[in-house]
Image 1 (cartoon, rainbow, N blue to C red):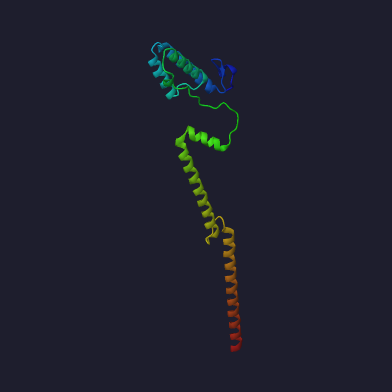
Image 2 (image 1 turned 45 degrees about the vertical axis):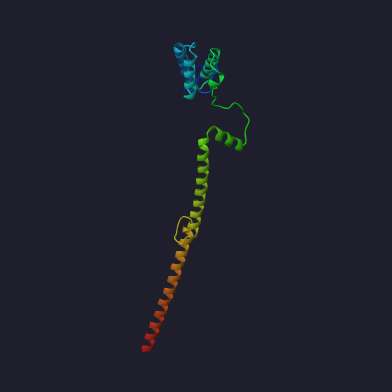
Length: 188
């Protein structure tokens, strides 16, 4: 399916994907629904709706975020204290600067502290697993039973032993034959 320019433009914004544009269209419907039902003259109701919208991440696109900002202005106009109005949360970054890995880890740890413990645990488990794999390879390499690491050498050694054993047996048989022949000759 081909992306058309019309499919990406919603409310004066050009979105990168059709899915984002669809999300914006849904947010326009939510805004229209709230505008019909919300009485801005009752700032406590507006504050309650605003807080729920922020906590539940109801609005994600610039269309919904601008509506949240409009709600902030209306609440301030009706006397809601600024410390009771949460700031509009932004879910993305706007800088193209690259940060070093330490600052990235720190920002992730600050945003998601519950993941910091999981990350450390994951790294420790991976280190242990690397050591276990190395130990298994050393055991396989030094093992006397044939395995994928040393099967060729084990097979060569086994055939060499068989060859030596067969050579000894052949010599024993030849000596026994000579002895028999010499015994037969001496009897005659």
